[in-house]
Amino acid sequence: MTKARSIMLQGTGSDVGKTVLVAGLCRWATRRGLSVAPFKPQNMSNNAAVAEVPLADGSGGEIGRAQWLQALACGRPSSVDMNPVLLKPQSETGSQIVVHGKVRGSAKGRDYQKLKPQFLDAVLESHKRLCETSDLVIVEGAGSPAEINLRQGDIANMGFATAANVPVVLVGDIDRGGVIASLVGTHAILPDADRAMIAGYLINKFRGDVSLFDDGLTAVEGFTGWKGFGVVPWLPMANRLPAEDSVALEKGVDNFDAGVGDGATVIVPVLSRIANFDDLDPLRLQPGVRLVFVRPDDAWPVDAKLVVLPGSKSTIADLEQFRALGWDKRLASHVERGGHVLGICGGYQMLGQVVRDPDGIEGLQKEAKGLGFLDVETVLVPQKTVLNRVAIDPRSGARLDGYEIHMGRTTGADTASPMVMLDGAPDGAANKDGSVRGCYLHGLFATDEWRSEYLKSVGISAPLIQYRDTVQTALDELADALEEVVDPAIFDL
Image (cartoon, rainbow, N blue to C red; front, side, top):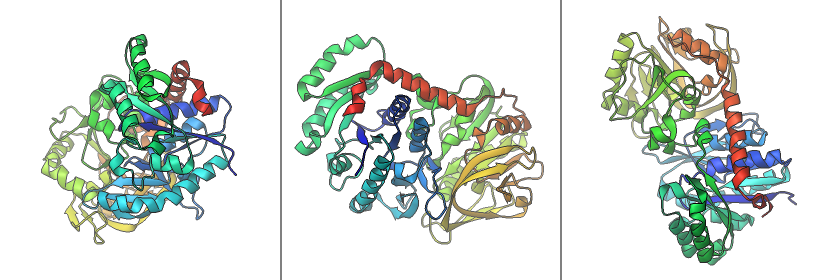
């Protein structure tokens, strides 16, 4: 027996704002006194988190970073049940498949379409467990139910909704144009059983005078018979929340990577398999820092104080791309000018002498020459490290909270000067003058005192901000905004 109601937000397309809306609804419903849980049956993202509720064997489990954020909005620890199937795109080998927090293998897109029906039981089990401990479960779909070519065996949208009997609210993005056609078109092409699951719709990302869309609402209702639950304005506070996946980077400066103002320049090279780039969010929101995401056709600012090499889902492929773009020479020039470099996880591996993949974990290439800034080498191994961690900076003594997600083992002379101590064990490396450092710890910039001290050590003077408070405030503002425009009957479907 389950006691929870469930509602599901699906989109007329990808990137219509479902993740942000679910986070806002989670915070709003929680403030109404409900015990709320987020749920996404299947997610595809290289921005992963380690769930705060450990697995039965005591190890950590991976979920999408978005579900971690939504759990934060609910004020409850994240668990692997909140995202039972996670796909992490890789080069050559397709996507890594994570089920209930553990790696189940890899598959190319066509092969995964054949595999996914076998994961429906895992999805339904997780949903049931959340229902047993919640008053309300708010479910996020993936992509769009209008992709009827993917309907057979679906576990992410209507396949889940029909199996679990969860009513659906369809989200349309008016900012991209054609929202009436996208809603009405979805109604037209859905099979009868799927169409019957839709209880209504939301319009998202509206700019300007909402009364100008009154005739649009009438038209949608006339064509579909669906109830409109509200018109949501453009939500600027969403830019202060961690992004779900690389779509945010692809959209560019207006949507994601505009910092809060002028300051010392920090460069982040954007490669094809960038992962966990939400590590950079505290820097993006840090006054006194001008964070610049550089893409293949972009020039590197010559005045940069720091270059951060972020994580990668395919270190060897991204390392080869880095060199092919000539970025190895740009990084060398940066160091020669007295600049600093920080590598995180895959970025740390790239800074060494060599990366080896004897088991073909990432693909066919078994070895790649590193960038040579640290005297270390990495061997990729099948056993994945997934842990939440408490760390200490041996230089400053500052405490850091973070997490590890990686499949590499790094050794070498420079590890004698570790960047951090993880639960008392050394991790990472630094060169002799400390200008180049790296480690496996994700989330390190979210620790305010350490971030401030580290920036000072590389010549950047930035005022101390409380990053986690910034995220909590943005979630509250998001809930406030939705409460003004969304019909609360959405919680009673």
